[in-house]
Length: 235
Ligand code: SF4
Image (tube, rainbow, N blue to C red; front, side):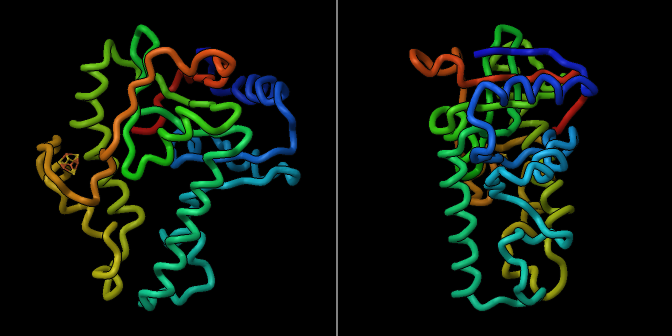
């Protein structure tokens, strides 16, 4: 596992150097991440026409998933909705076998452990195994002392804020709201109280937790690349 510290302006040179180690023109997988948006990764990736990109949770301007494009912007019959969701699921499965998987982490400890949580597990599963290379872009705000501090930060800061963010940014208002669970994220106890109360909400984005202590081993020991950016990124 490699950890690099960079300033934002020099990030792309480092990434291109990193990507040069594997077959260019390959398949890129992307895990949902605000940090990747903030550093402008998508502008660059989408300008590279030879890439196949599986960006599972890509959104339209109105907050819907891109797979919903072409669908009426109001009520969608259940069978259509379920089929669109199946496509999103399939995209995340393909991202798991990409050449390079980009995402962030929820925390990096001072002794080099990576701690992340997921609602459905697609992001942390891909970090642990699957893609040839994994690039984690992590802002300085996510550096913590140890695993206990990482878990506390995730439960009581990152996850409640993330639920609130999704509800505000991607929540569907009006008549359609009752059909979309994301609208109810703003009603979760952690959002109302500002910290986790370990409830059993199905909508929680903290169903699975990864504590990566030593990267991946053996033949795959150079898979994981953490790029620590000397700026605050993500939550
Ligand atoms: S377990 Fe419940 S309270 Fe805790 S982060 Fe998840 S939804 Fe919020």
